[in-house]
Length: 140
Image (tube, rainbow, N blue to C red):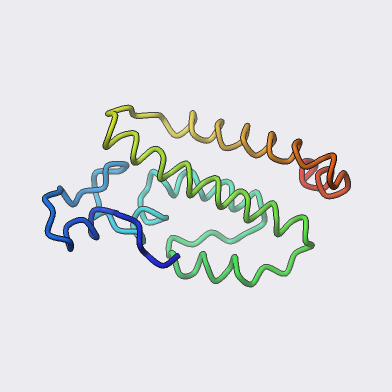
């Protein structure tokens, strides 16, 4: 949240050679704000999950952070929403790095399925510690 990610705008500001285009959508200048969620690729990952969580998704980083900081849902639902957000952020960053460093490109459906599987596994792993919360989360 402190904008310390080595996105291309930061790398260029350090004087290093890099192309400025977003590797996910190839149509925008890669910055934190673009990568999360101005980029069409990441937006198509985040939007359906945000809607499913009951959020009104925004393409602006600051609006998204504001809405996450002011959630007024039950504790289990806040935890689930924040977990979904973290998984989406991590998945976008992981895909970006995979494309840059390994030239491996995954379709959005593959990443979406991975987010879903990871989310279900994370919820199931907390079932023993808090069965009610895990049950509410998995049902939602």
